[in-house]
Structure formats: C-alpha cells, structure tokens
Length: 225
Ligand code: C5P
Image 1 (cartoon, rainbow, N blue to C red):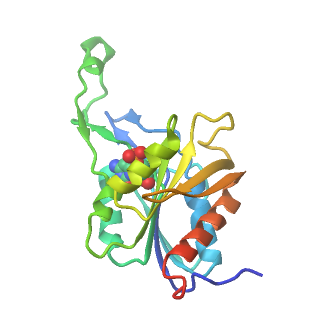
Image 2 (cartoon, helix red, strand yellow):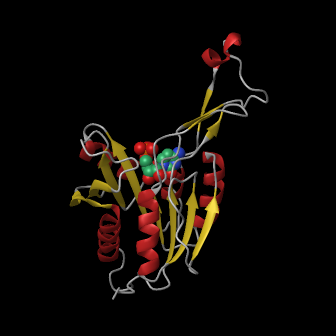
C-alpha cells in the first residue's frame, strides 16, 4: 500500500534529452533516455501528486495516469518555453532533462553537403539554462536539479546548486563503471548548497526516485507534505 504523502502537490518534471536540428535530416542530441524522469513522475503519481511532465524525445513509455499532463517537446528552446510557463504555478520542480547546452545558430533548409565544407562552419548559440532561470525567480518552487559529472562530482554539484540557486542537486557520476545513460540503475549523491545530503548508493531508478521524494518531503515544509 503506497502512502499519499504528496497528495495534490503540483509537481513539474523535465526529462529526456533535447534535440537540436542542423538540417532536415540531422540533429545533435545526447544519450539521455528519460528513464530517471519517468521514474520520478511515476513515484510522484503513486504518492498522490499532480504532475506536469515536459519531455524531449524519449526511449521509454510515458506514464498513463489521470493526474499527469505530458508536454512533448524537442528543442531546448521549446522545452524552456513550456517549462518556464508552468514553473510559477507548481510547488516542486525537478529538472532532470539533459538539455543541450548549444544549438546550431542556423538550421539549414536543405540537407548539408559534405562537399561544401558546411560541417566545418557550424556556428553555435548557447541555449537558455532553464534550471538557473527558475532558480532566479522570486516565487520559485522547491527546486531540484541534476548533474552528470565525470570528475570532482561532489564539488561540482555543490557549485551548481549554488550557481543555479537550487534546493537540491542529484549528482550522477557518469564515468562510473555501471552506465548511467539508458541504464535502469544509477548511483546518485544528493547535495545542497553546503554539503552532501545523502549518498543513495547504486540502485534501480524507481527506488532512487522514491528516496529523492523522501528527501524532498523531509526538507520542504515537512509539516505541509
Ligand atoms: O549545467 P548542467 O547542464 O550540468 O546542469 C544540469 C542541470 O541543469 C539539470 O538539472 C538540467 O536539467 C538543468 N539544465 C537546464 N537547462 C539547460 C541546461 C541544464 O534546465 N540549458
């Protein structure tokens, strides 16, 4: 029997990669599968929350539930538009999408030709940082970010938590032997602006999601949730 300790809490979750088009047939993206975001959404739904789920192209099935509203996006720009329009009306935002940091400045209308050196001359434009933007807002929700690191994981995650004004950052070491991207398991260490809050050990993403929710519950107005 599951506890409904997030009953009617409004929760925004981002998940999956973004995809930035180069031309009609090519894009740049990353290895995110969306599994962690889906696990978080399922855990929230199970525990009574009302979920806005903003996602890029996923390799997993979306949760089907009367309390979830899914927003299918592709580019970082589109994900940012949708996410930012929802952020002020939620209690908790968990941003675990792997948003592409850059997009090609220009999307070619025709397929790029290798003979024309077009690949050597791609200019890149920085995408908006959705997490940092929400972190800078006045009435921001309880804000949880993710960080995929290959070195100095804890230090980098704490710095990210400070710079983006988050309440928690869930850090993954993507250099660890067990793959994180696409895997059903991962090893998350949760930090705040000062310290390690909890080392969640290696486990499946469903159990990790529930542990993250337990931490959110204990930190965000424990009497309200
Ligand atoms: O800076 P970095 O990309 O490592 O930060 C990762 C965290 O920031 C994740 O929570 C991710 O969802 C979020 N992010 C974002 N918008 C971006 C880049 C990252 O929301 N453009």
